[in-house]
Length: 129
Image (cartoon, rainbow, N blue to C red):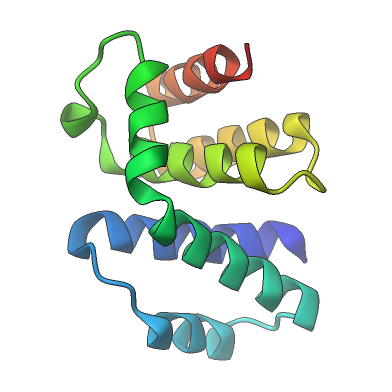
């Protein structure tokens, strides 16, 4: 299910924000734990490797759209959610904008705070303009 795949991709991106090391074995670890189909696995690979390869560009886009909020001070969960959502919006045209935003908000509700939901939504809305 895409929701599960996005959850896995988010966790992998979140881990990357700390280590800044691409870890192919992470993909395999998560795939073992989840019952993912080939499309879900392809999505995870594309998003994770895409975020890693476009990290600096995505970070800059977050900085430009977070109302001068220092990117280094953004809660890591929110930062990882924004990396994932902005990557989807910018590079994965097959995923509708609204789906990327809604899924980022759902993940924020699950893993972050109520204020984070508003923050993530605001950054993505500004990015969309």
